Length: 212
Ligand SMILES: [Zn+2]
Ligand SMILES: [Zn+2]
Image (cartoon, protein in one colour):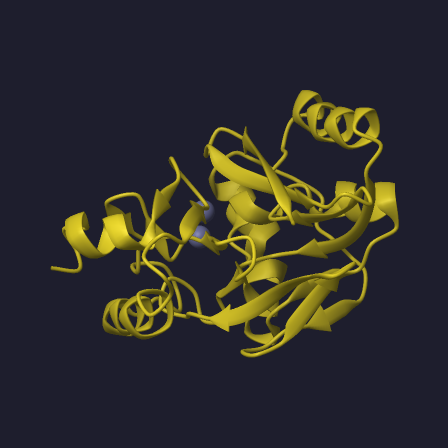
């Protein structure tokens, strides 16, 4: 069974997730560590827990989700997994960083492309890739049916949804994807979002003001 550890990183307060199993293999999703102290905090958790990083995943490539890609890739020798339609955003992210006064070095390695229906294995644990564009053009979520959770990026938040006023955003598409791709999951599914506290699919069906 996958366990999950979250960190809140950068002035943008992004949630970074480390998923790990009993064999101490781990997956790092959206490393938003910006400051050296944040990179040290992430590495300290991994090192002190004896974890072996096996995969680096991005739900999408807004700057706050990719600040630490290069650090994680270089440190642990990992190749970035993302949806092909996020590559343009990734390449633009450092320019975006300058506008926010948050300069950073971008990931420069190869890409492994993920798409709807792909299955990622960490030992015997499986993560299913769910495409849910709208907040960004190639946004994907990572669903663990056995674990009863989804790492959802900036699609669905506790009582809110991802913004759609950035390039490639589409409000109607986002709402449709939340209804058709996320709200079909079991109500008790825990949602680990890109920002803010955890929630569940059932709670958001009932209380999310954007979806009533
Ligand atoms: Zn975003
Ligand atoms: Zn974000």
